[in-house]
Image 1 (spheres, one colour):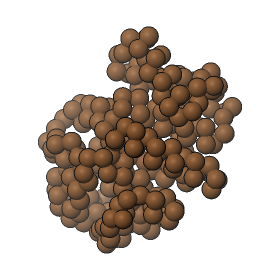
Image 2: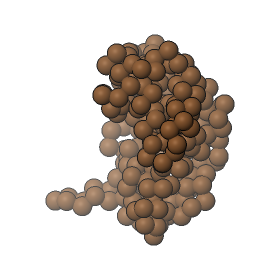
Image 3: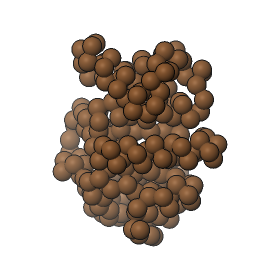
Length: 224
């Protein structure tokens, strides 16, 4: 499902920074994997490359069998739209839109008919247990509820890959546990491949597979 072969990423400036150095990684369809490491280890860079938000300096990345090297920006955008759902630490909800409208937005961008969009958005908000918050604005929700809306939005097209960047990092511990349980439930129900970047040891250890990065290298990859 996700395959990296000798992937490196360099940032050039006054000093060249090697964020990732010849990383090899394969994540099977349906796996739930945590990615840990200190600040500057390359976690966010790796997530951005897998998510098609950036391109590697060297090496090959395949997403669901598609080689990303050499494809156009439009093709990369389509892969992100159809294959990948993103969950961010700070929710990134539009403040003037209701829960229903925030979840509906990616589907409008796909050109779905209004009735189909409305049905899918309601279905997703029910899936994350927010069917009674359809018309609420983000400012009227708790942090945990906002993250649930963000998760529903990420699942709008039932993507085969779900990338979560510190999904519990902006939440209190109890709410973080609830959000993690929700992600696990959705993973089991939908069969998506889930990759979670986290600094939280409890979140990392709850995943069946843990990967650790340090100085742009994978230094641990264990299951169980």
